[in-house]
Image (cartoon, rainbow, N blue to C red):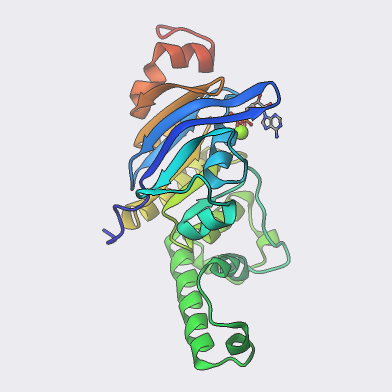
Length: 262
Ligand SMILES: Nc1ncnc2c1ncn2[C@@H]1O[C@H](COP(=O)(O)OP(=O)(O)OP(=O)(O)O)[C@@H](O)[C@H]1O
Ligand SMILES: [Mg+2]
């Protein structure tokens, strides 16, 4: 286990995000257990993406507080939160198509500390050490995600599932404390979903961090997540293990439009 396994304790209190008359998030309080994988489920428009955006700082909150490892980060910008270890993925793949897999993941190194620009331009020893560190980090992450053999291929040549993994590798590279993924399995077939789950689980077992995943595929939530949180109309309607939450009558009605016995 990593020595920083206890980091990534995210506590959110009374979070509200109001868009005009729409309460996209209507007072959500959650303690995310550090080092665990939480599935965030709920019907379309439940406020899942908005909640992740509020946590990452991408969207401003109307009210509420956020606390990371005991520090109040409510007033921190998205950039500050990223540097503190709150990292987000996007609902669609965003890669540099004409660059290699390696270089795409290397982009993640921008978030790591670097020597001053002059040292970089003159390729001073501090810059050379930094470059070696970055290359080693990229190789390690590619290897952990089963992408090393593709390192020098162009991302545009890869199948969609691998492209998603490249994007995730770029996010993992900076060793986030809290990683927020919005429907990472969207567009993947059953075999690709299994690969994503086993890859993420294996990586997470080796490098624990707080992982929050929005997902519509219930089977995937059961296989990937340890905890589960269901939202409907901007509010938390159930928390617990994936099985507990998925069997909750409120969840079944809100999410599947059917009661528990159906
Ligand atoms: N930028 C915005 N401006 C106005 N309303 C918004 C905005 N973003 C989201 N909403 C509204 O807030 C509510 C929650 O949307 P959100 O995208 O968070 O839901 P979601 O649970 O992620 O849904 P989906 O499963 O479809 O991705 C919806 O009613 C949506 O129309
Ligand atoms: Mg969404």
